[in-house]
Image 1: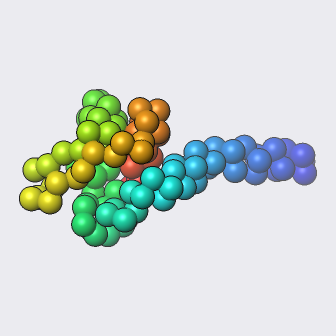
Image 2: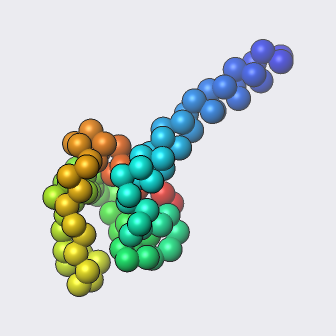
Length: 102
């Protein structure tokens, strides 16, 4: 029984690792200078972004593209600059993580 509990806990920790890794990635790529998980800063909160695009099949790809290339007009007049320090794989990880914020 103890082994089953230990295995369950270990699997839970492993499944949470990508969420922590993506938060760390967001921090390392300076995303948190303009965004926060639960409140508006310069840009919208990640929870607001996740709510706006919930259920949209192409949301992750669209957000990854915005992370890479920047954008304007979706959240007001302040543009989001391009992020050349982020590669395509990292942009996809960040977009998936943002969309997982509920």
